[in-house]
Image (tube, rainbow, N blue to C red; front, side, top):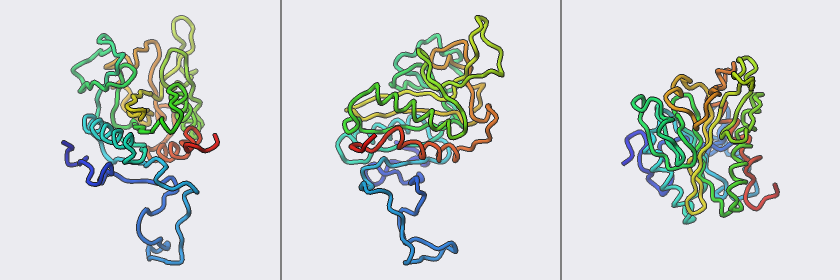
Length: 276
């Protein structure tokens, strides 16, 4: 069952204890208001688009820390509802308490400190990953039946979305062959013993599909405790480190990142049936 801070949704696949946001940031219900807070019938809400609102993904933002088991239960229920056509696609932004997750390719030897934090079998692609406060997790529940059923193109779109989001803060994120996630060059750090320039990982990706609906998703480090990553070999990759927006000297808040994610989403994921 869901605990008090993350209760089971009352209406089907709605989430009563999170903040629902439109990228345009306007009131979802009630009459528009003047600056002094009074209702003003002369004011009109801006039109979101020519597309009916229920065909766009629902943005869900949870405050505080969300338990991993509860998040997984919610995602699985939402995915089933999306697959049946009973719920909209959704992007869920949240933070977890400190924990490690093991993907389907995780190797036991890469769990360096198994007693440090709870370890969960995520049943997603990938290896070991850390989640914790200061890291924005974006769980992506999109219907690939409407988006081409191309898994490679979907993963590429996720990577491009993360790179475009980081670019909003003048960070150049890059993809590396054989290394999952998004990486940044660190010329301020000494190169590896073989002379390879040092790079740090700033964003991770791990996806699963069920009935062609995606779940799990991406994570971007805003200001997590980077030392917590030392309990695992992140994604099975040695020789390179982990960084965050704040570690790179950028005073970015979680709210700043959320705005950037919303702003860049449509570039990576145009509406089904629209021109790319």
